[in-house]
Image (cartoon, rainbow, N blue to C red; front, top):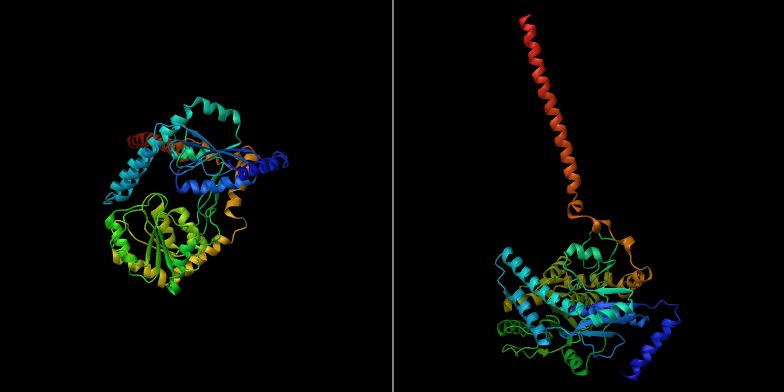
Length: 445
C-alpha cells in the first residue's frame, strides 16, 4: 500500500479516535457488476467518515477488484468456481435470458425461473464455501461488526422466500426516487436513494473531447448496453451500426466485439467510456441505453432523453417508467430494424418534448433536502447507532401467510355466518314442524 493511502488510513483512525467512538465496523456482502458501483459509492463515503469497512468477496470475483488502492478492506475466501467459470455462467444465463423466443407469458416466466434457479445455485455455492471456511468465520465473529450491508439479489444464508428476506432487514435502501417511481404507499423502513452515484461531469480525455467537439451543432449520441453486455451478435451489431451511420450526430459506442461492416465514419467504438462525464457534456443529445438503473439515473441527473433497448431483469420495467414520464422511447433488441432505431433516435432528438421531460425529471432529482448519498449513509449510521431499527419494521413480517392475508379472520367470520345460518335453519324447521300439527288439531275439533 502506498504512503498516500497509509496516511489516509492514519487520518481516518485519528478522526475516529477524536469523534467519541462514532466510528463503527461495517461488513459487506456485495454483488458483481452495476450493483457494486452503487455499493462502493456508499462504502467510500463510510470510509471517509471514519468507519471501518470490510468487504467479503470470493476468489472468483470478476468485477470487484481488491487490488485497487482504497481504504476499504477485502476478505477474499477461496471457492470451487474459477473466474472463467463465473464468466461463462454469467454469459450463459444472460444469453439464455436475452435471446430466448418471447412467444408467450408462460415461455417468458418459465425461462426467467430457470435463470433464477441457476443463479441461485451459484450463490449457494459461494455461501457454502464462505460458511465452511471456519478460520474466516471465526475471524468475522471476533471482529464484532456493527452492521451488515448486503445486496438483496445476492443473499447468503439459509434458503428463504422473498418475503422472509424482506422481513430480515432493518432498513432497505432502494436505488430509485420519486422522479422515476409512480406514487405508491411505502413502508417506514424503505428509503429511496436513487442517483447516489451521480456526479457533475468531469473533463473528457483529450482524444475523446476532440471527437465530441468535431460534432459541431449536431452534438453527440452516447450508446452503451451496460457493464455486463459488451458484445452482441454480428447481425445485431450491423443493424445498429447502419442506423447510427445515418444520423448527423457523432456517436460514442461502448462495444468490445468485431467491428461492424456497416459502421459509419461518425461512430467510434470504445471498450470503455466515461458514461457520466459524457452524459453531462453540453453536446450530448441522446442516450441509447439498456435501461440499467445506474445509467438511467445518470441520464436523469443530466437531463438527457433516452432510447431504451431493455435486455433482461428490471430493465423493461425501468424503460416503461421513463416512457410514461415522456423521457424515452422503447425498442425490442431482437426485433428492431435499422429503420426502427433510426426513427427512434430522430424522435428523441428532434422532438423537444423528450428533452423538456428529461430536464423536468432532472430538476426533481436535484431538488431534494438531502443528497441521496448522504441519505443512504445517514440511515446506515442510524441503524448502527441504535443497534437496529426494529421500531420501523412492520409487524406484518412476524405474521404467518394466512394471518398476513387475514384468512384466519375470514375463516372465523365465515364460521360465525355458517353457525348463524345453521341455528336459523334449525329454528325454522322446528317451527314448521310444530305449527302444522297445531293447525290439524283445530280442524278436527
